[in-house]
Image 1 (spheres, helix red, strand yellow):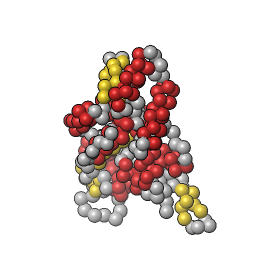
Image 2 (tube, helix red, strand yellow):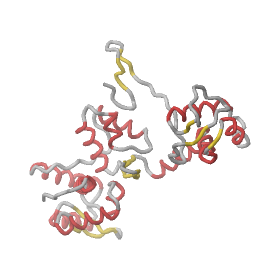
Image 3 (tube, rainbow, N blue to C red):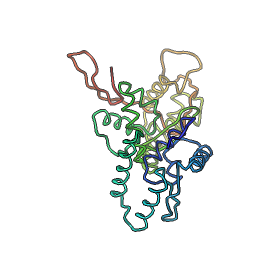
Image 4 (cartoon, rainbow, N blue to C red):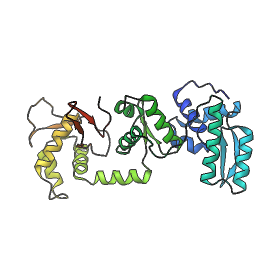
Length: 291
């Protein structure tokens, strides 16, 4: 069935539910970026069109499917007979996807692991980030946009890529579980950079020397050089700024916090790249492709 979509989030929902044998609404909200009201309206529209139909109740959950009434009946019967194991469900879904493609309807095949070098590099990139936007990934891998977006959609279809949140016009996704994110956030906040960043967010106006003095009771091994060095890093990145331009940053330099992005500390990271001396260029970077 042809379904007209007007907005990007509707296309995202449609692509996701078509890649599922069956789903519940919470699956859509967990893996797609539409706001709850917009998601509910679009799903209701799909129900009215017959593009989404009920698919039985299991474990107290009301399932839906985008594969039509006949398949919904089969899926429900398989579930009630205890025949809907993960392996059988995937095999059945792949049959349906193959049939759809034969009729000219492209459906994303759920993929949990990278299959090519290109996908492995994308996986390394998104795994290294707490969250990311599609634009971040496209900017890092501009040479094959169709393959890049196809892999991201396949990961979402497999429920590996999840909706993380939005800020202004940007939509963020993640491949990390809530437990992994909490653990990573805890580690960051308890790091030396985390302690300095927390002090900066509290004080808002400060000097490196003042931060060091404030942190010494809880971090007796913290050196003034570490604090000053981190302030230099934050200055370069635009998080803090001296009231007046200065070429040299010292322990006495006054700062204002100008970009308070949240409780987790911005980090300075070094990466290893591969340089090809034959072509005098960087041939590989873990942050993305280098032309």
